[in-house]
Image (cartoon, rainbow, N blue to C red; front, side, top):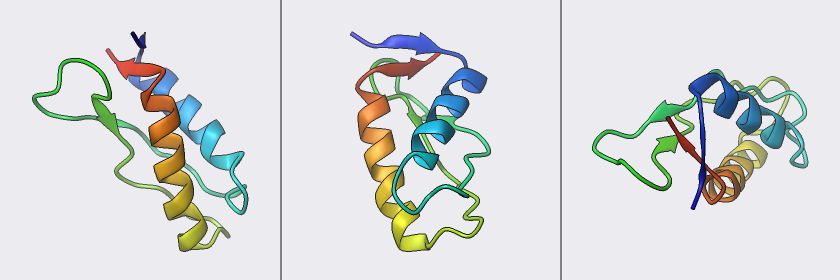
Length: 77
């Protein structure tokens, strides 16, 4: 069972979690987006990330980690 979060709440959680990853202190998540046709579980994605001074390889790895971790805890309402 996952907890429901609004788009703003989930975006902030994703950005905080991303910035906590090694090498991603300057990365930014502008928004999370609902996946079409998905009603339960991991029904959202992080489609875009602003890199800042972070390396794309660090951010790629971190986005996958963050999405997997937060997707187990939260769904978009």
